Length: 59
Image 1 (cartoon, rainbow, N blue to C red):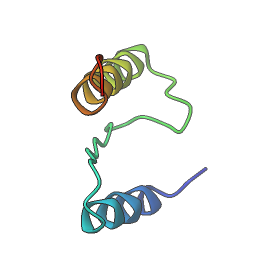
Image 2: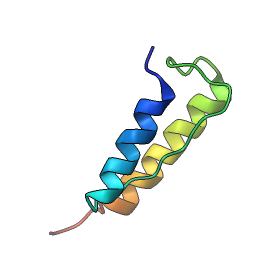
Image 3: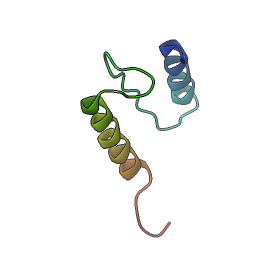
Image 4: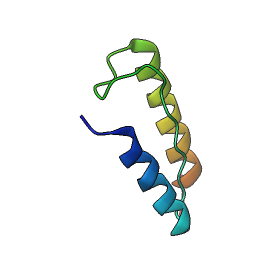
């Protein structure tokens, strides 16, 4: 299992590097996203982030 602190450190390093990052901590969830409600939340947030930071269309 990956300690949550590693994710927090990575998110902060990305912010300092000027990269788009959103860190969402899923309370009570494990590394495998075993709970359906938080698994769905993760998928919704991932799609939203990708749409915002990788828009469809000509570059």
